[in-house]
Length: 324
Image (cartoon, rainbow, N blue to C red; front, side, top):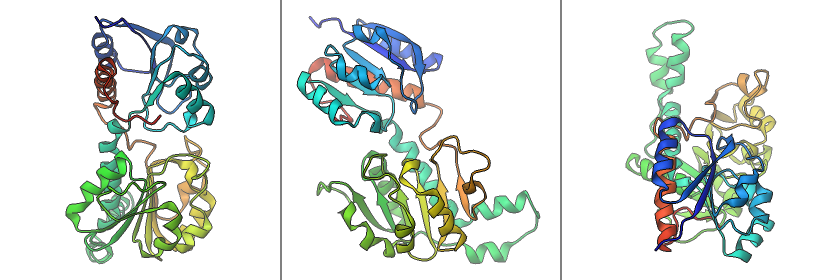
């Protein structure tokens, strides 16, 4: 008979998702933390976590390291940079622990968001919206002349995890030339993929540069004046990864100099982006407030992803989205 486990969560969930979680974990015990936390914030230390075998949400990093009873941590986010530490890896390895994330939950919405950015850039939707709120003219010839086709253009996709792979699937029917970049090339990618050390050489080919890289020491301020200068004049830059991967001042300069045709950002550093920040006024810089991963079923899908993995954990199967 399956032993009863204690599952702790600090995920901030709406009522329907919370109810589905409570029902779905039975017959196991569920502890709901008094300190609920969103996907992007670091969780507070919680004494109740000491009783848990499994954590779902954003547990305190120090507790993840120290609590030997904690066998499996499932993050409610796709990002896991705050846990990507030698101390965490050592502690989990020592006790046979597992860390998984929710990248599968956010792959579809983030990929669709990136596609929407790219189509908006090509079909000049932003020009039409700006016209509506300004002159309310009928600039047919101007917008038609400036519109482009994605077919035949080249896109570099940095980050070939769940989001990048799904974006490739969405872009394939548009007959683009697609190039992948990842930290470690596996060899089974669906498009030509190169190590990140090749980025400098490949950038001049790209009409579109889509950044889906996670935050890390390696990617911190990766996109700087040098890389923006390496890009083709008139290229478009997109960021749906992490704001810390971009030097904002260098991006603003690339837009002001018209080296870049446009930038589409779903993430910034800091967040929220202050109203006086130069990115708001940079020409052809379009910003969504970290909404790429969101949709109406986001929290229910997150809970269901955890519950599916819980069944796998119970039966000793490999977990989806395991990162450690």
